[in-house]
Length: 391
Image 1 (cartoon, one colour):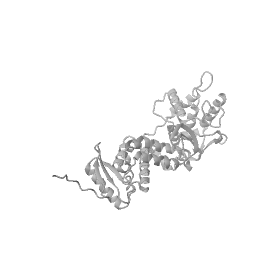
Image 2: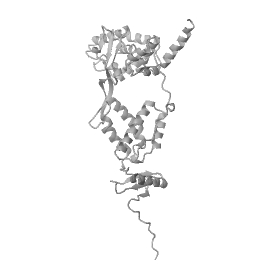
Image 3: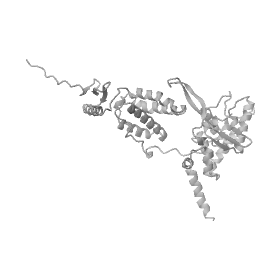
Image 4: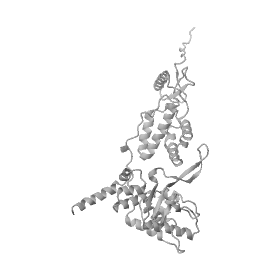
């Protein structure tokens, strides 16, 4: 009688390797010091063996308290338990958007313990081809925080982000060139703001707001947060100390429950709190807004309001900008923030010292102003070289 040859039974602590019906290989390991087995997946038997050896080494060093949870579930818990309550609402919206759009689709269904450095590095490099440096930095920060937390909690034997680096700046698309309105285009915007219908009311109700922005350089959120009490008409100054941002309403667990709503908070930095002088055109724009509100029986403490007297949103002001540019025949890609660039460019071209312009813009330091508007300064320097010949 022929007896079947039985495979020697594995001893406790050796771990096991097997292949699933879907073709994936599984390495499973549990030592006497582990609360639960550590399970990792691989594409081949050799890879599964390598991962099993790594698990054994880590267990011998006391590093493994592994989790078989999916990355998406683990990251969701971290995001809405820790990050939600540690940053401003507007900042959390940016973190959440980057996570849901770029990170969760890539790793959400993978096991937390199965994600390796090369996969994370590859994601960052790929994203650097299409996204801005700012967005990729947010992705990098989120991944670093999640895996650092998992490692510190003992849910990972090693932090796969430890060797991952931000892609070099040359990898990213060149930043968009600073676009500013030319002097004749600024005059065109001012003319459109003065246009009236047959009933004597402005064709575009909030067009004077754009004139105010182009002559003060305020950020959109700073302007939308302005109260009439912030304006000193006699001294011709505006006090900037608030910022309006559009953020999502959320339930107690951090889940979005409504569309975005306006929230007014203090400026982000101390340099954001400042006093900005008002020239004649800025004063005139404010007086025109006041006159429009009186005619329409709008009563509000806010400078920027809708026909119903509610606070104007950034989306509504963008629509005003599009209409004004169309009326003025200005056909160029232009945003509200570029009204700020227009103010800075015209101020520098007028010979106002960069230190003063930087203060009016509320930049944290003068290097920000210099790096943003270096093209304007270089142009002024070239003109100065020509004047040198006249000396």
